Image (cartoon, rainbow, N blue to C red; front, side, top):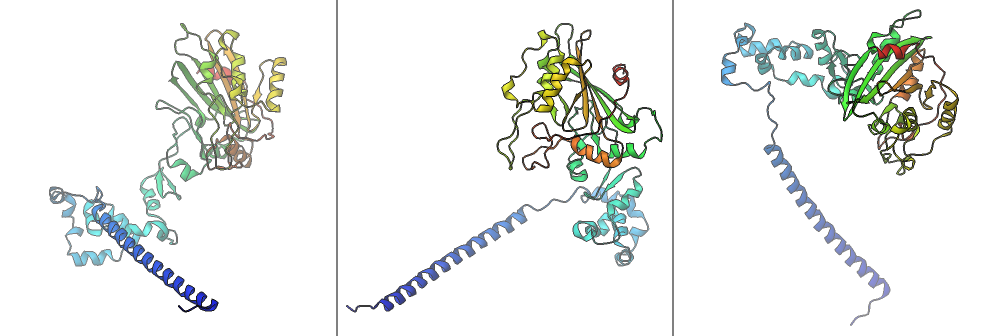
Amino acid sequence: MAVLTRSQWVQSTTVNTKKITRKRALRKHHSASHHEDNLRDKITTRRHAAKKPRTSYHQRSSSEIEGDPNRNLAIFGLPKELFDGIISFLPPEAAACFSLTCKEALHLLGTTSWTYFRGRSRRYRAHGSLVKLLQRDLPGSEYCLRCETLHPPLKPPKDHRETRSTKPCMGQDASIDYWPQTASGGYSVVWAHILHAFQSQPPSEPSPPIDLFDGDFTFHHGAVTYRLCSSAHWVNRNLVLTQQHRLRNLDSRSKALRAVDITSLPFRVCPHLSTTTAPPPKTYHSRNGVSNSPFLTNIITRAFPPNLRKGIPRPRVFRALNPSEQRQIADVEMKADFLWRCRSCPTKFRVRYEELTGEIVVTAWHSFGRALYQARQFWSCLVRREGPTLGSAERNSEYYSTARTWADFDIPDGIEIALARW
Protein backbone atom coordinates (compact mmCIF):
# COMPACT_ATOMS: atom_id res chain seq x y z
CA MET A 1 0.00 0.00 0.00
CA ALA A 2 1.49 3.30 -1.14
CA VAL A 3 1.92 5.98 1.45
CA LEU A 4 0.73 9.44 0.42
CA THR A 5 2.76 12.44 1.30
CA ARG A 6 1.14 15.42 3.04
CA SER A 7 0.92 17.49 -0.18
CA GLN A 8 -0.53 14.55 -2.16
CA TRP A 9 -3.15 13.88 0.50
CA VAL A 10 -4.21 17.55 0.58
CA GLN A 11 -4.42 17.65 -3.23
CA SER A 12 -6.57 14.47 -3.41
CA THR A 13 -8.85 15.74 -0.66
CA THR A 14 -9.34 19.07 -2.50
CA VAL A 15 -10.21 17.28 -5.75
CA ASN A 16 -12.75 15.03 -4.01
CA THR A 17 -14.30 18.02 -2.25
CA LYS A 18 -14.65 19.90 -5.54
CA LYS A 19 -16.32 16.88 -7.15
CA ILE A 20 -18.79 16.55 -4.31
CA THR A 21 -19.55 20.28 -4.37
CA ARG A 22 -20.04 20.20 -8.16
CA LYS A 23 -22.42 17.24 -7.93
CA ARG A 24 -24.46 18.96 -5.22
CA ALA A 25 -24.65 22.18 -7.24
CA LEU A 26 -25.79 20.29 -10.37
CA ARG A 27 -28.36 18.36 -8.35
CA LYS A 28 -29.63 21.59 -6.81
CA HIS A 29 -29.73 23.33 -10.20
CA HIS A 30 -31.78 20.51 -11.75
CA SER A 31 -34.15 20.56 -8.78
CA ALA A 32 -34.60 24.36 -9.01
CA SER A 33 -35.15 24.19 -12.78
CA HIS A 34 -37.74 21.47 -12.33
CA HIS A 35 -39.47 23.54 -9.62
CA GLU A 36 -39.48 26.64 -11.86
CA ASP A 37 -40.96 24.65 -14.74
CA ASN A 38 -43.73 23.34 -12.51
CA LEU A 39 -44.38 26.80 -11.11
CA ARG A 40 -44.47 28.31 -14.61
CA ASP A 41 -46.93 25.66 -15.74
CA LYS A 42 -49.14 26.34 -12.72
CA ILE A 43 -49.11 30.09 -13.35
CA THR A 44 -49.91 29.60 -17.03
CA THR A 45 -52.74 27.22 -16.18
CA ARG A 46 -54.05 29.63 -13.57
CA ARG A 47 -53.96 32.51 -16.04
CA HIS A 48 -55.90 30.55 -18.61
CA ALA A 49 -58.34 29.25 -15.99
CA ALA A 50 -58.95 32.61 -14.28
CA LYS A 51 -59.51 34.69 -17.38
CA LYS A 52 -60.80 38.14 -16.51
CA PRO A 53 -64.48 38.42 -17.48
CA ARG A 54 -65.60 41.17 -19.78
CA THR A 55 -66.96 44.24 -18.06
CA SER A 56 -70.67 45.02 -18.15
CA TYR A 57 -70.33 47.84 -20.68
CA HIS A 58 -68.65 45.43 -23.16
CA GLN A 59 -71.34 42.78 -22.87
CA ARG A 60 -74.27 43.11 -25.26
CA SER A 61 -76.75 40.48 -26.36
CA SER A 62 -77.59 40.00 -30.04
CA SER A 63 -81.03 41.52 -29.53
CA GLU A 64 -79.50 44.55 -27.82
CA ILE A 65 -77.05 45.03 -30.69
CA GLU A 66 -79.75 44.80 -33.34
CA GLY A 67 -82.08 47.12 -31.45
CA ASP A 68 -79.46 49.79 -30.78
CA PRO A 69 -80.71 52.99 -32.53
CA ASN A 70 -77.17 54.38 -32.68
CA ARG A 71 -76.29 51.85 -35.38
CA ASN A 72 -78.42 53.86 -37.81
CA LEU A 73 -76.26 56.96 -37.41
CA ALA A 74 -74.43 57.99 -40.57
CA ILE A 75 -70.96 57.83 -39.02
CA PHE A 76 -71.41 54.21 -37.97
CA GLY A 77 -72.66 53.31 -41.47
CA LEU A 78 -69.37 54.21 -43.09
CA PRO A 79 -67.08 51.46 -44.41
CA LYS A 80 -64.70 50.19 -41.74
CA GLU A 81 -61.58 51.36 -43.61
CA LEU A 82 -62.96 54.89 -43.95
CA PHE A 83 -64.19 54.93 -40.34
CA ASP A 84 -60.78 53.79 -39.02
CA GLY A 85 -59.05 56.39 -41.14
CA ILE A 86 -61.14 59.20 -39.68
CA ILE A 87 -60.61 57.95 -36.13
CA SER A 88 -56.85 57.81 -36.63
CA PHE A 89 -56.75 61.63 -36.88
CA LEU A 90 -58.37 62.07 -33.45
CA PRO A 91 -56.11 62.92 -30.47
CA PRO A 92 -56.21 60.35 -27.63
CA GLU A 93 -58.47 62.41 -25.37
CA ALA A 94 -60.99 62.94 -28.20
CA ALA A 95 -60.97 59.23 -29.09
CA ALA A 96 -61.53 58.33 -25.44
CA CYS A 97 -64.43 60.76 -25.13
CA PHE A 98 -65.93 59.46 -28.38
CA SER A 99 -65.76 55.88 -27.10
CA LEU A 100 -67.79 56.93 -24.06
CA THR A 101 -70.69 58.39 -26.05
CA CYS A 102 -72.47 55.06 -26.63
CA LYS A 103 -71.89 51.29 -26.65
CA GLU A 104 -71.72 51.16 -30.44
CA ALA A 105 -68.82 53.62 -30.45
CA LEU A 106 -67.13 51.67 -27.65
CA HIS A 107 -67.52 48.46 -29.65
CA LEU A 108 -65.89 49.99 -32.75
CA LEU A 109 -63.11 51.96 -31.02
CA GLY A 110 -62.35 49.68 -28.07
CA THR A 111 -60.54 50.85 -24.95
CA THR A 112 -57.07 51.33 -26.44
CA SER A 113 -57.25 55.11 -26.10
CA TRP A 114 -58.01 54.77 -22.37
CA THR A 115 -54.50 53.51 -21.62
CA TYR A 116 -53.16 56.92 -22.61
CA PHE A 117 -54.56 58.34 -19.36
CA ARG A 118 -53.44 55.61 -16.95
CA GLY A 119 -50.37 55.29 -14.73
CA ARG A 120 -47.08 56.82 -15.80
CA SER A 121 -48.27 57.56 -19.35
CA ARG A 122 -50.59 60.36 -18.22
CA ARG A 123 -48.13 61.98 -15.80
CA TYR A 124 -45.60 63.20 -18.36
CA ARG A 125 -47.96 64.48 -21.05
CA ALA A 126 -49.50 67.89 -21.36
CA HIS A 127 -52.99 66.78 -22.46
CA GLY A 128 -54.24 66.29 -18.90
CA SER A 129 -56.42 63.45 -17.66
CA LEU A 130 -59.55 62.04 -19.21
CA VAL A 131 -61.35 62.44 -15.89
CA LYS A 132 -60.32 66.08 -15.78
CA LEU A 133 -61.74 66.59 -19.25
CA LEU A 134 -65.01 64.97 -18.23
CA GLN A 135 -65.27 67.46 -15.38
CA ARG A 136 -66.51 70.00 -17.92
CA ASP A 137 -69.73 67.97 -18.26
CA LEU A 138 -70.20 67.66 -14.47
CA PRO A 139 -70.31 71.19 -13.04
CA GLY A 140 -69.79 71.34 -9.30
CA SER A 141 -67.65 68.19 -9.15
CA GLU A 142 -64.07 68.40 -7.95
CA TYR A 143 -61.19 66.70 -9.73
CA CYS A 144 -58.73 64.92 -7.42
CA LEU A 145 -55.22 64.65 -8.84
CA ARG A 146 -54.19 61.90 -6.40
CA CYS A 147 -56.85 59.31 -7.21
CA GLU A 148 -57.88 60.52 -10.69
CA THR A 149 -61.51 60.70 -9.56
CA LEU A 150 -64.30 63.23 -9.84
CA HIS A 151 -65.57 63.78 -6.30
CA PRO A 152 -69.03 65.25 -5.68
CA PRO A 153 -69.22 68.78 -4.24
CA LEU A 154 -68.04 69.04 -0.65
CA LYS A 155 -70.90 68.76 1.80
CA PRO A 156 -71.16 70.70 5.09
CA PRO A 157 -69.94 68.95 8.26
CA LYS A 158 -73.44 67.84 9.25
CA ASP A 159 -73.79 65.89 5.97
CA HIS A 160 -70.17 64.95 5.28
CA ARG A 161 -69.14 61.34 5.88
CA GLU A 162 -65.67 59.87 5.76
CA THR A 163 -65.17 57.32 2.97
CA ARG A 164 -62.34 55.02 1.99
CA SER A 165 -60.96 57.70 -0.35
CA THR A 166 -60.94 60.52 2.23
CA LYS A 167 -57.50 59.89 3.71
CA PRO A 168 -55.78 58.68 0.49
CA CYS A 169 -56.95 61.87 -1.24
CA MET A 170 -56.64 64.42 1.57
CA GLY A 171 -53.91 62.85 3.71
CA GLN A 172 -53.80 61.37 7.19
CA ASP A 173 -54.89 64.71 8.67
CA ALA A 174 -57.96 64.67 6.45
CA SER A 175 -60.79 65.02 8.92
CA ILE A 176 -61.86 65.37 12.54
CA ASP A 177 -63.82 62.14 12.71
CA TYR A 178 -64.10 61.36 16.43
CA TRP A 179 -67.50 63.02 16.85
CA PRO A 180 -70.54 60.75 16.51
CA GLN A 181 -71.40 59.57 13.00
CA THR A 182 -74.44 57.37 12.50
CA ALA A 183 -76.83 56.51 9.70
CA SER A 184 -79.32 59.06 11.02
CA GLY A 185 -76.81 61.90 11.29
CA GLY A 186 -73.34 62.94 12.28
CA TYR A 187 -70.68 65.61 12.17
CA SER A 188 -67.34 65.49 10.36
CA VAL A 189 -65.08 68.47 9.66
CA VAL A 190 -62.41 68.39 6.94
CA TRP A 191 -59.66 70.90 6.28
CA ALA A 192 -61.56 72.27 3.25
CA HIS A 193 -64.30 73.51 5.60
CA ILE A 194 -61.78 75.51 7.64
CA LEU A 195 -60.16 76.85 4.49
CA HIS A 196 -63.54 78.00 3.15
CA ALA A 197 -64.30 79.78 6.44
CA PHE A 198 -61.06 81.79 6.30
CA GLN A 199 -61.56 82.66 2.64
CA SER A 200 -65.02 84.07 3.43
CA GLN A 201 -64.05 85.78 6.69
CA PRO A 202 -66.09 89.00 7.21
CA PRO A 203 -64.13 92.25 7.37
CA SER A 204 -65.58 93.33 10.71
CA GLU A 205 -67.24 92.01 13.86
CA PRO A 206 -69.63 91.14 15.36
CA SER A 207 -70.51 88.62 12.68
CA PRO A 208 -73.40 86.17 12.54
CA PRO A 209 -72.87 82.42 13.02
CA ILE A 210 -71.23 80.64 10.10
CA ASP A 211 -73.98 78.65 8.40
CA LEU A 212 -71.51 76.11 7.03
CA PHE A 213 -70.83 74.68 10.50
CA ASP A 214 -74.41 74.56 11.79
CA GLY A 215 -75.53 71.10 12.86
CA ASP A 216 -78.03 69.41 15.16
CA PHE A 217 -78.76 65.69 15.33
CA THR A 218 -79.86 63.14 17.91
CA PHE A 219 -79.19 59.43 18.15
CA HIS A 220 -79.63 56.68 20.73
CA HIS A 221 -76.81 54.64 22.21
CA GLY A 222 -78.32 51.92 24.35
CA ALA A 223 -80.37 53.66 27.05
CA VAL A 224 -78.68 57.05 26.46
CA THR A 225 -80.03 59.76 24.15
CA TYR A 226 -77.16 61.75 22.65
CA ARG A 227 -77.76 65.15 21.04
CA LEU A 228 -74.96 67.13 19.38
CA CYS A 229 -75.47 70.80 18.48
CA SER A 230 -72.74 72.60 16.53
CA SER A 231 -72.01 76.14 15.42
CA ALA A 232 -69.04 78.39 14.60
CA HIS A 233 -68.34 82.09 15.16
CA TRP A 234 -65.64 84.68 14.64
CA VAL A 235 -64.69 85.92 18.11
CA ASN A 236 -62.01 88.63 18.20
CA ARG A 237 -60.83 87.46 14.78
CA ASN A 238 -60.53 83.85 16.03
CA LEU A 239 -62.49 81.07 14.36
CA VAL A 240 -64.15 79.18 17.22
CA LEU A 241 -66.13 75.98 16.71
CA THR A 242 -68.69 75.23 19.44
CA GLN A 243 -69.89 71.71 20.19
CA GLN A 244 -72.64 71.15 22.74
CA HIS A 245 -73.14 67.54 23.84
CA ARG A 246 -76.45 66.90 25.65
CA LEU A 247 -76.92 63.42 27.10
CA ARG A 248 -79.87 62.06 29.06
CA ASN A 249 -81.54 58.78 29.82
CA LEU A 250 -83.96 57.49 27.19
CA ASP A 251 -86.62 57.12 29.89
CA SER A 252 -85.59 59.83 32.34
CA ARG A 253 -88.85 59.61 34.33
CA SER A 254 -88.30 56.04 35.49
CA LYS A 255 -84.51 55.97 35.68
CA ALA A 256 -82.02 58.77 36.30
CA LEU A 257 -78.89 59.19 34.20
CA ARG A 258 -75.75 58.02 36.01
CA ALA A 259 -72.13 58.98 35.57
CA VAL A 260 -71.21 55.46 34.45
CA ASP A 261 -73.73 55.73 31.60
CA ILE A 262 -71.62 58.53 30.10
CA THR A 263 -68.14 57.24 30.86
CA SER A 264 -68.89 53.79 29.41
CA LEU A 265 -69.91 55.12 25.96
CA PRO A 266 -66.99 56.16 25.83
CA PHE A 267 -67.39 59.94 25.65
CA ARG A 268 -64.88 62.22 23.90
CA VAL A 269 -64.28 65.97 23.80
CA CYS A 270 -61.08 66.22 21.72
CA PRO A 271 -58.31 63.86 20.54
CA HIS A 272 -56.69 63.82 23.98
CA LEU A 273 -59.68 63.76 26.36
CA SER A 274 -61.78 60.62 26.48
CA THR A 275 -63.39 58.34 29.07
CA THR A 276 -62.26 55.12 27.39
CA THR A 277 -60.72 52.36 29.51
CA ALA A 278 -59.41 50.37 26.55
CA PRO A 279 -55.72 49.41 26.83
CA PRO A 280 -53.25 51.43 24.74
CA PRO A 281 -52.52 49.98 21.29
CA LYS A 282 -49.21 48.26 20.72
CA THR A 283 -46.98 49.95 18.16
CA TYR A 284 -43.79 48.93 16.40
CA HIS A 285 -41.94 51.67 18.28
CA SER A 286 -43.25 50.95 21.78
CA ARG A 287 -44.68 47.71 23.14
CA ASN A 288 -45.59 49.13 26.55
CA GLY A 289 -48.03 51.98 25.95
CA VAL A 290 -49.39 54.47 28.47
CA SER A 291 -53.02 54.18 29.58
CA ASN A 292 -55.62 56.89 29.19
CA SER A 293 -55.87 59.74 31.69
CA PRO A 294 -58.74 59.81 34.25
CA PHE A 295 -59.07 63.59 33.77
CA LEU A 296 -62.32 63.69 31.75
CA THR A 297 -63.84 60.80 33.71
CA ASN A 298 -63.24 62.67 36.98
CA ILE A 299 -64.69 65.91 35.58
CA ILE A 300 -67.91 64.26 34.40
CA THR A 301 -68.28 62.29 37.63
CA ARG A 302 -67.88 65.45 39.76
CA ALA A 303 -70.75 67.11 37.86
CA PHE A 304 -73.25 64.43 38.98
CA PRO A 305 -74.94 64.33 42.39
CA PRO A 306 -73.17 61.98 44.86
CA ASN A 307 -75.87 59.31 44.60
CA LEU A 308 -75.32 58.98 40.81
CA ARG A 309 -71.54 58.58 40.88
CA LYS A 310 -71.40 54.84 41.55
CA GLY A 311 -69.96 52.31 39.15
CA ILE A 312 -67.24 54.42 37.53
CA PRO A 313 -63.97 52.67 36.59
CA ARG A 314 -61.34 52.24 39.29
CA PRO A 315 -58.26 54.49 39.21
CA ARG A 316 -55.91 51.59 38.49
CA VAL A 317 -57.12 51.32 34.87
CA PHE A 318 -55.86 54.87 34.22
CA ARG A 319 -52.51 56.53 34.36
CA ALA A 320 -51.69 59.20 36.93
CA LEU A 321 -52.80 62.79 36.40
CA ASN A 322 -50.14 65.12 35.00
CA PRO A 323 -49.30 68.41 36.79
CA SER A 324 -51.50 70.53 34.50
CA GLU A 325 -54.53 68.34 35.20
CA GLN A 326 -53.83 68.33 38.93
CA ARG A 327 -53.73 72.14 39.01
CA GLN A 328 -57.07 72.44 37.23
CA ILE A 329 -58.76 70.01 39.62
CA ALA A 330 -57.37 71.99 42.57
CA ASP A 331 -58.63 75.31 41.09
CA VAL A 332 -62.17 74.13 40.39
CA GLU A 333 -63.06 74.28 44.08
CA MET A 334 -62.48 78.05 44.16
CA LYS A 335 -64.21 79.09 40.92
CA ALA A 336 -67.79 78.82 39.70
CA ASP A 337 -68.52 77.84 36.07
CA PHE A 338 -64.96 76.65 35.71
CA LEU A 339 -63.60 76.35 32.17
CA TRP A 340 -61.50 73.24 31.72
CA ARG A 341 -58.65 73.15 29.20
CA CYS A 342 -56.86 70.49 27.23
CA ARG A 343 -53.10 70.70 27.63
CA SER A 344 -52.39 69.41 24.10
CA CYS A 345 -54.82 71.30 21.83
CA PRO A 346 -56.70 74.66 21.80
CA THR A 347 -59.86 73.31 23.46
CA LYS A 348 -61.91 74.65 26.35
CA PHE A 349 -64.98 72.97 27.78
CA ARG A 350 -67.53 73.22 30.56
CA VAL A 351 -69.54 70.42 32.18
CA ARG A 352 -72.78 70.91 34.06
CA TYR A 353 -75.64 68.75 35.32
CA GLU A 354 -79.22 69.97 34.90
CA GLU A 355 -81.35 68.65 37.75
CA LEU A 356 -84.71 69.54 36.17
CA THR A 357 -84.15 67.47 33.02
CA GLY A 358 -81.55 65.02 34.37
CA GLU A 359 -79.19 65.90 31.53
CA ILE A 360 -75.45 66.22 31.48
CA VAL A 361 -74.37 69.08 29.19
CA VAL A 362 -70.79 69.33 27.92
CA THR A 363 -70.02 72.45 25.88
CA ALA A 364 -66.65 72.49 24.11
CA TRP A 365 -64.96 75.30 22.20
CA HIS A 366 -62.22 74.57 19.65
CA SER A 367 -60.11 77.45 18.33
CA PHE A 368 -58.55 77.56 14.86
CA GLY A 369 -56.68 80.82 15.34
CA ARG A 370 -56.78 84.16 13.58
CA ALA A 371 -54.74 83.42 10.47
CA LEU A 372 -54.57 80.55 8.05
CA TYR A 373 -51.07 79.51 9.09
CA GLN A 374 -52.28 79.25 12.71
CA ALA A 375 -55.30 77.23 11.60
CA ARG A 376 -52.99 74.73 9.91
CA GLN A 377 -51.03 74.26 13.15
CA PHE A 378 -54.15 74.02 15.29
CA TRP A 379 -55.74 71.59 12.85
CA SER A 380 -52.90 69.08 13.16
CA CYS A 381 -53.42 69.07 16.95
CA LEU A 382 -57.20 68.62 16.70
CA VAL A 383 -57.01 65.57 14.41
CA ARG A 384 -56.72 62.25 16.23
CA ARG A 385 -53.95 59.98 14.90
CA GLU A 386 -53.29 56.54 16.32
CA GLY A 387 -51.98 53.35 14.74
CA PRO A 388 -49.42 50.55 15.09
CA THR A 389 -47.03 52.04 12.50
CA LEU A 390 -47.01 55.62 13.77
CA GLY A 391 -44.03 56.96 15.65
CA SER A 392 -44.12 59.37 18.57
CA ALA A 393 -43.97 62.40 16.25
CA GLU A 394 -47.10 61.30 14.34
CA ARG A 395 -49.30 60.03 17.18
CA ASN A 396 -51.90 62.36 18.65
CA SER A 397 -54.45 60.72 20.91
CA GLU A 398 -55.44 60.11 24.51
CA TYR A 399 -52.61 57.57 24.75
CA TYR A 400 -49.84 59.82 23.51
CA SER A 401 -49.78 63.61 23.51
CA THR A 402 -47.39 66.36 24.47
CA ALA A 403 -48.08 69.53 26.43
CA ARG A 404 -48.21 72.66 24.27
CA THR A 405 -48.69 76.37 24.93
CA TRP A 406 -51.59 78.03 23.11
CA ALA A 407 -52.67 81.64 22.88
CA ASP A 408 -55.81 82.20 24.92
CA PHE A 409 -59.05 82.78 23.04
CA ASP A 410 -62.47 84.13 23.97
CA ILE A 411 -65.63 82.09 23.67
CA PRO A 412 -68.93 83.32 22.17
CA ASP A 413 -71.28 85.00 24.65
CA GLY A 414 -74.59 83.28 25.35
CA ILE A 415 -73.86 80.42 22.98
CA GLU A 416 -74.91 77.74 25.48
CA ILE A 417 -78.36 79.30 25.89
CA ALA A 418 -78.81 79.68 22.13
CA LEU A 419 -77.89 76.05 21.44
CA ALA A 420 -80.21 74.82 24.17
CA ARG A 421 -83.14 76.48 22.40
CA TRP A 422 -82.57 74.61 19.13
